[in-house]
Image (cartoon, rainbow, N blue to C red; front, side):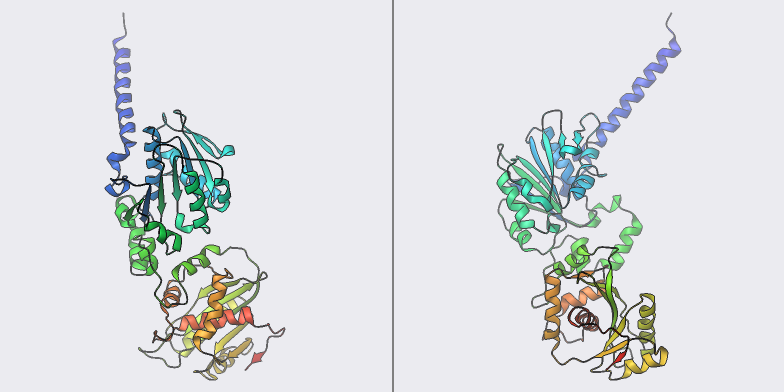
Amino acid sequence: MLNIQLINKILHYLHTEKIRRHKEASSYEWPRWARENQLPPQGSWRIWLILAGRGFGKTRTGAETIRQWIRDGVCRRIALIGETEIETRQVMVEGSSGLLAVHPPSERPLYTPSKNELSWANGAIATCFSAEAYEHLRGPQFDAAWVDELAKFREGQQVWDQLMFGLRIGKAPRAIVTTTPRPVAFLKNLMKNRDVAITRGSTFDNAKNLAKPFLDYVRHHYEKSWLGRQELYGNLVEEKEGTLWTPALLERAKESYQKDISLRRLIIAIDPAVSHGNNSDETGIIAAGVTTEGIGIILEDLSLKGSPTQWIQKAIDAYHRLKADRIVAEVNMGGDLVEQLLRTYDASISYKAVRATRGKVIRAEPIVSLYEQGKVWHAGHFHTLEKQLCSYVPGQTRKSPDRLDALVWALSELMFTRPSSRKIWEG
């Protein structure tokens, strides 16, 4: 005689398992959960370009699109291209929104890191590439591609050209590009291509999946800045006409920075305000160093609006905290004020007065050239300083750019002046 209790347990298990599998399957139904701007656009297009802010869900959209194309049998040879080999693997393949994560276990591809390859049961194969080694795109051919953070690529045009030559098999080869936009020429040209369908989105489109403290913080600190327009709202922030510095130039300076570098010299540069009041200018204070390889590093922006006592103490504190070699200060307007203050508070400090004998533009242009050559790095996001650099238009900007001036003095002293072997007071 059958055990009724056992039968009931089996039936209950089967029912529970059926519900679990149904829930699991529904959780992988991307069209059910995706926002409208995460689904492929209608119409005829060859490239789907998604320009969106951080946290929009670009990676998930790219992975789900590739998954759908493979499942529908519209592609069998796919190129996956990230900025570096590590990012391709850790973000596009193994990441929490990458290709392995978006597939249900029964459909998940086999990932072979040694081959940089994913293979699906239906025969589809995706190969991982790094934008740093774009020459590896020569030879292979594809019917689909996913390119992540294209605007970050150092050799974006070359990567894109090689991909386009290889995207040549199948009935309708297509690519999806997921990136936060930057004002680089090749991206702007790509946006004008009639074969490109563009989807735009912001960080806040995905607010329900992001931490509220994060959203509150970025709204407060970045929403009204050019960086916020780019990184949060996915806007292509064009340079202001006539500026010496551009957002792209500064972004590269931040990306190039490497920790644990050895500094040959470190100085504090001051562009002092000559008055103190509600309408007074700020005092620009920049801490900068130069590496043994000759790379200038902007370490800190300590600029502030305050009394001479406040800003001189700020500079002195930074001098000792960072073990600086010298304080450099512009004295055209402030005269001997800086030296007098330093002697009063700490006469042991090495000090050098610098005087502007040439116009601001002439002094700044060699510094901009260093940025263009990749010889200046930023050790962090200095939002107010960067805004001032990117908004300064020679002959048009009325307000004195104090932070800019201090930066120019700092890098000029580090990069173009032979250092003294002794700590002395110089006039």
